[in-house]
Image (cartoon, rainbow, N blue to C red):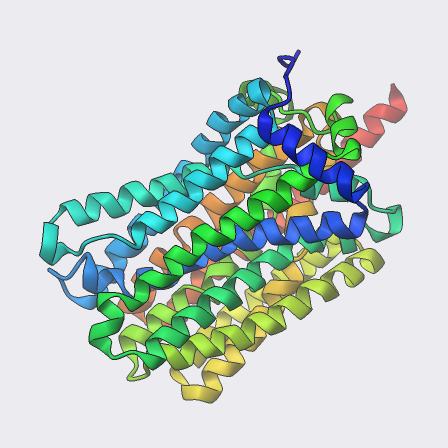
Amino acid sequence: MATSQRPSTSERDASHLSESHGAVNPGEMAIGVIIGRTSEFFDFFVYAIASVIVFPKLVFSFTDPLTGTLYSFAIFALAFIARPFGTAIFTAIDRRTGKSAKLTMALFLLGISTCSIGFLPGYEQIGAASIWLLALARIGQGIALGGTWDGLASLLALNAPPHHRGWYAMIPQLGAPFGLIVASGLFAFFVGNLSAEDFYDWGWRYPFFVAFTINVVALFARLRMVVTPDYQNLFETRELQPSKIIDTLRNEGQHVVVGAFAPLASFAMFHMVTVFPLSWVYLFTQEGPARFLVIEVVGAVFGAMAIVASGMIADRIGRRALLGGCAIAIAVFSGFAPQLLDGGFIGEMVFMIGGFILLGLSFGQSSGSVASAFSATYRYTGSALTSDLAWLFGAGFAPLAALVLSSKFGLISAGAYLLSGALVTLLALRLNRQWEIRRVEEEQRG
């Protein structure tokens, strides 16, 4: 039984705001979800881009650029390792004090962790302490991201008409391309308009400061949602009530595992078209980062359109069928596409646009592929854990693994990571299908 909660000051303020504007409709709910996810992905991509073009020079200046980038990617992975621990910490806070307090603390921790990186001194100023401070801030980002799960995506899915669940499932995923467009655009502006000296002195810091402002806006948008009557009613009826981590794993562990591995292809693809290509082009070609960041923006626009298309396609053929088809397509893509990054502007554009279209189609439905398998009691916490583990296994080490493989064996080897993700996705979807058939047969016998 969850601890009874008294409404916090922020909950009361948000309730008054909600009452003054009337009931929140599904359209407003969708906007709140997109704003929240965009803020998270903006923080994510600001760090990812800096891990390629800033930190190897600033924090790892004592080594060569390739090794510095590998070290930077190792610290990049720390947030994904820390994220499940953040979920455990903030789930306990949620059960004791409510969602508004949890969200406020998590988003401020995320904003402060991201903003503090903007003040980071380099290795030349404070030595190895610069590395430790960067790692600490990255862990802070990961813990905070574990607490930003608000259940709004689940609420949106629960309110979806039966024949439009794919459409509603894709809405939260739009935050990824939107966050990438803003982050890449900001960095492209500063890299393209400042001298190298000015950029590495102060220009790279501004996107990290912007992150804090965006998080404050996202906080109010999400608080506006979580105190609405519809949301509170679902919370009270245990549809979206946080459960203990250990109870969730004991009762729904197999769904958590399958849910974590089913979208592995799309999560691996996620970094293969966002973080890794920038590192390869920056390290192994004569091209500057500004032009490729613009190419990323163009690719992200195609990715956003593909995410929207995924909703319509999934409603016609089913989310599981779409994910399976995309996994096969990603496996084919992994066999030839990475080499396009050595093909100049045309090759890079073909790789990025084709990759983002595949990513959008698969990523657009990755969050909802097995979430419906959770019982009402464990849906809220089970969905959060599934998301954490999917990011950890599918994306956390993708840039590091791809760069290590490609630097030693060439671009063709980077496709091996994608191929392994596609195969795991197909296996997980098959297991999920078999378990679902077995469950239906048991219910019929019972």
